[in-house]
Image (cartoon, rainbow, N blue to C red; front, top):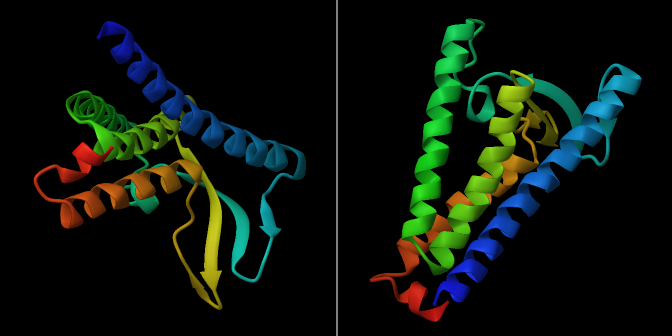
Length: 166
């Protein structure tokens, strides 16, 4: 029994670390370009650019403040939410647990940046003609995917039937 739990814990850890490291690799690459070129504004396709901005707020730059105290309070709240997600991972299994692992991995990536850089580097710019979506990063992709999976599970699976299948 303990051996099986250790395998699950190890698998969960590997998933979270893979997400965290994937996010870090992309961010370090973009920051290296910014260091060399003094800017990042790369045209990839007619729908996708890489454009570096520093996000001091939460998702999509919401709640950006110049005040260090407010920034620290927001960072503390994000840290508490990350701990709550970790507790939810322990209590859940199957599809829901994997969805939460994606959210945790992305959350740790952005939390690391908030603590290390005092801002989160966002650089993926999706657009169509003159409409630009909010600039985001790889961690945001994993967080969004995890949230979409959780919503999917709540809407389409009832009475934990998805837990029995996984």
